[in-house]
Image (cartoon, rainbow, N blue to C red; front, top):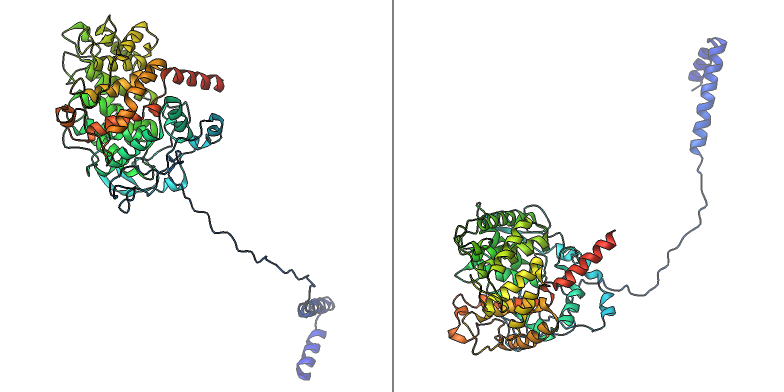
Length: 506
């Protein structure tokens, strides 16, 4: 050590004075840093002790009402459903819940108004997780979740007044049932019918074995009329399959595969409502094709000038009739509600055709100026939706409909249920004494005629031609008739609502 120290001192003294002091300064600073790094710095920090109360935390809240369309929840539904023992609603696993509350709530409108937010936000996180079937235009694929251009997803039901479908859900539906003269029993019957239709849907999304495009449309309309969409917890998959089936039946030429304009009108009506309630591009494109084909068929030159503007069985027929035209006009009207417009000329020409078959006594005929109850109901409803509800001619036709009766056992015709379906809507639009009379005439008789398992057979038993297509057809018509309270707004309310929204927006 002494030898090393001596050598270091000798080396240091051999340096120039400047270098020698520089080396000493560097060594001094190194020594200071070493000393400071060796000192243990202790910070006196106060001790913090976390104390917790011994109370047990509450369990996590479960989403007990995931169905965004379950606003009518005040009574236990113990009516007929499949899969149970007939006494209650117990069903096979994976079908329906053991309880369905659907009572008409308080008649106090202000109380119901406090829940109106439910109508605006009907899509919940749990609803978004509901499996929906991805669909192209040709068939079904595996269940998926979430939104996307290739899925029959939903953008949510539009807010009140902006699309004409929002009154079908939430507290708004409750108020419409109350205001229109519905009852707990009518809603029970609707739910039972929807469950029957769900259980009897074909694998491809249709119903029945014949006229499946038209019956498939009526089946889908029954669910849409109750506010059900692909996001509905209980009926979402049923709705999705039905939409996919109808989409697959629309050809590139703008006509349904069967080429029958009855089916064309019914499918247009169903897909219009489906688009209005989902805003799905999977539905919009084929719907636009349907409308294009329908408008082309309307322009076909008719042999009889009074038929111009109407439609008949085939797209190229040179004739027209009120029955086919009625379905198509309702389809075009619903497309307009959903935001897809046809030229005004198309509506004007359709209205002109209907006036051409109007009977001066008050009523509409099949293809000439005459009147029958069924065609009068079709004509009234269509002319109301075409903007002529205030015409004295419509009042005379409503007076004629007010003379009609509902006799389930001895109906006036083999197509009585078809007529009652249209009369129910026409009289509802007529309002006042017309609806008061007809609601008493039809409501309880429909409920009473429902079978224990939730379906309906056509009135008149074996004599009814409406049984020819199987029970899905009369079941859908009866279900739609009992949904009249909230399916469409009375046209005067619709106009007032739009006017109010317009002034509010300004």
